[in-house]
Length: 449
Ligand SMILES: *Cc1c(COP(=O)(O)O)cnc(C)c1O
Image (cartoon, rainbow, N blue to C red; front, side, top):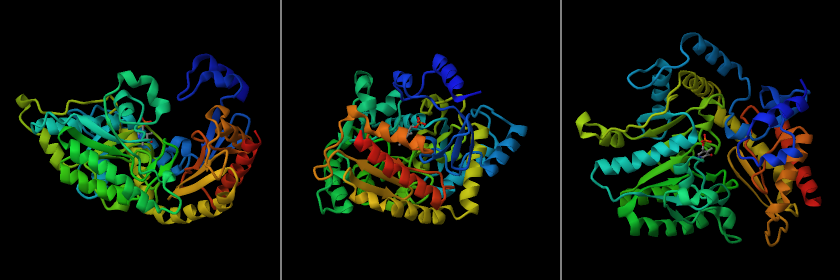
């Protein structure tokens, strides 16, 4: 079996996500035969360092022996059972442990099987909790400019990345958009903190003026990942939490991408010392093994739904694979690794290596900014450094970097013109140096055109 044969078969029957399929007339799809640690291998023995954790899901490497063992064991006893009226040990233990490790005050777990569904659940729960208290006028959600919360219609409506959203606009819920605290846009010499505080004033005004019609604010804490890895200061979250308390508005933290250590702490919310009313988790939850997501919320919210059946206040939302035992078992094995190894401590060393190996790019004529939050590092590639004029999107310079990196054994998948690293935590300093070298050469190659 060759790459070319598999690619041919694939392209005659598949339709790939987030892809203009016509691109594949010239860009081959890469069939992967196996993975080990931070590496993927195709059918011709070419290896690729997975610098983006296979779309931000993988935490402890491909074919991780500890997660594999847990899954094999789970397979022998129970693959799946419905979660309505029934339960199982992995989902109970996972819920106990999530309540334990998430910010204090989060006490209830509601499961789904992907991130977008978790966002839908949080939105519906927030609206419904207010409704059950007789506050039927609260129907709107506040979202940030440049935010991303998934692709299903509800999640798309509260997102703000035009590329994904614009086409479907006539189908979407109406939302209230607040300016982003995105610190790339700060004035020269202004600190992240000062800019985030300045941007918060506009959010505060919206919340103060429209509290009566607002259910919740939904945010990605610290890093707007799909929105080109734009970052902001934790003080914004701290102020937002206070404002939501003051005006009677829920706070939904979408930590689907940033949860499980990506920002340097287990959860990004910890850096602001806040507890959201709804915490959405997925992606790294199973170590990148299986689709599973969860919304962790407060007992106070749960109690708004708890009543005699005839009062019809229950949350009647379900997905067939809710709380799948294999997914839960992979998640438990993932949490065991966090427990047994000093993951957060070791990541601080890796994050430092990421910073050091990319330091030379700060002065690169086609780099406007190198920014980092924990284990996420992004390089903003531009046409002109001084004016920060971006490359024309039609030139697809990021795609150029993608091709260059693949030819040199690294899987980078730039977001537009932003090259970023979000590697699995089993990556080594040498592999980080390779990522940085290939990114630098890729930026040079893309600039030459
Ligand atoms: C990926 C992502 C989602 C959507 O998760 P899916 O599992 O892809 O549906 C939602 N929010 C954020 C912040 C994400 O990064």
